[in-house]
Image 1: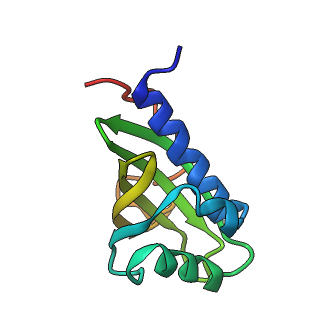
Image 2: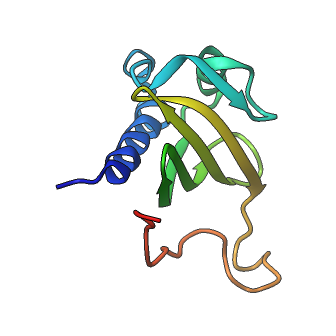
Length: 137
């Protein structure tokens, strides 16, 4: 049996897959609240602002996530956006708050991806999996 936190993680993963990879905007409406609150410097307000941003990105856009953490109504995804039309990919931590079965609020932390060669530690920012997913606090 799935816990509420597991269901929240699966819901958010499906939402991101539907919007960013499938680009099915009609289906994505069922995931995002009509009064969605956006706390990102890169995205205009609301659900429509998010959808407009995705529509403006190149068709090669791809989203992948390796770690999903859930705590109460919050879900955090550690992911990578590639094919975004910039010289380097973005590594992003997206934080979403769920309310009434929809994504209600969003924050993000974004940085340019460092490869093994460009990282001072010699470790790449992407390509290594995380060993655990947090499901309960």
